[in-house]
Length: 111
Image (cartoon, rainbow, N blue to C red; front, side, top):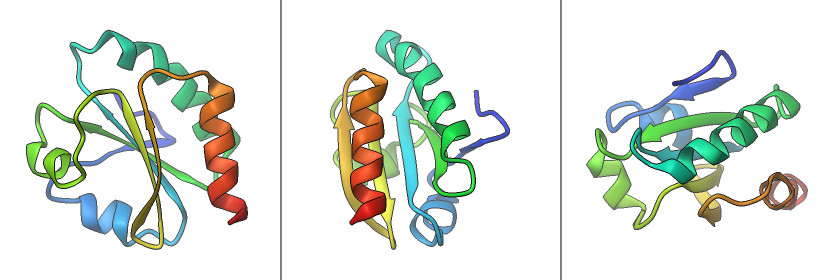
């Protein structure tokens, strides 16, 4: 499901790709059976294009990567976590409008 601008991450590469990234990272925690995940996916793709070069975007399938899902206390999907300098600095739970997601990304970028 990843596109050219969205990386697939998993339990084994999460630390390297996300936590050690030089740029802020938005991780979309999702699952194939999740209808709201399908609703937010095009929004994540649009934002990945808009923030290309500034923010890294990644998707993590919660069904296949329980270790990372549990590590970050993901209880409902979709959940978008925003990481900066290896720390979680933002969390959006549920399918939300593009404006809400963009506002949260901007908050992190200007912090």
